[in-house]
Length: 259
Image 1 (tube, rainbow, N blue to C red):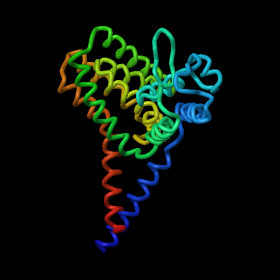
Image 2 (cartoon, rainbow, N blue to C red; image 1 turned 90 degrees about the horizontal axis):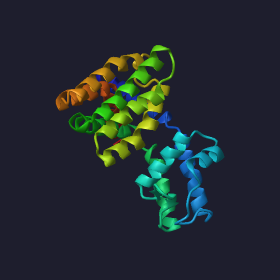
Image 3 (cartoon, rainbow, N blue to C red; image 1 turned 90 degrees about the vertical axis):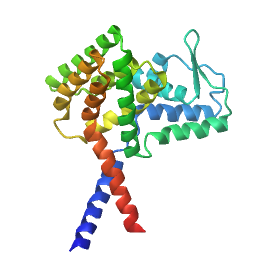
Image 4 (spheres, rainbow, N blue to C red; image 1 turned 180 degrees about the vertical axis):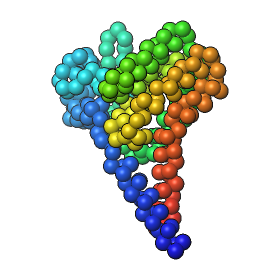
């Protein structure tokens, strides 16, 4: 009886893991990265070449400029592109073979391990909000508050608020005044929030539940209460963290049962 119960639990856990993996999709930003990779490996884009302006790239790829910006940011983060505010964005001076391998890894990074991405976002956002509570300026508070209000207006009118949710969290990361944390969150958040919301991973009513949670986070940042800020974000992201934890636990049971 006990053994059968354990087998049933393992089967349920395995099904849960497979469900998580099934939501992995290629984002518009990754498609852009993939096309840029083809241009580089084919020699049409050489190290040192300047990319067209974001507006032109958006028109050519048939996507919004925000997706182009996200793709460029990811490639900049990995040192594959270099941006000069005065003259534009250039392909880094790396060999085509090296760039090909790195770009492949950048694309895989978003898909390989959904549980790991959830866990990474959780701990990064805890660090970001603690620093934001300590370092925020009045301008930061204004930007975070505006993002929060935009999110609430969309949710209360029954509209999708994925972008507004992203902006709220990104503005907090910006207030941390740590460019590395901000860049990593900018890389992780778009695909994760879209997957979580579109697949209702945290439940049907998650959008409305997040409203008071966002307010608590902002209040803690305003008060420069680092502990309260950390606790507020931990509570806000708890469902996501528990999904990640359950995924790791389930995978551990499955691995043990197969040995």
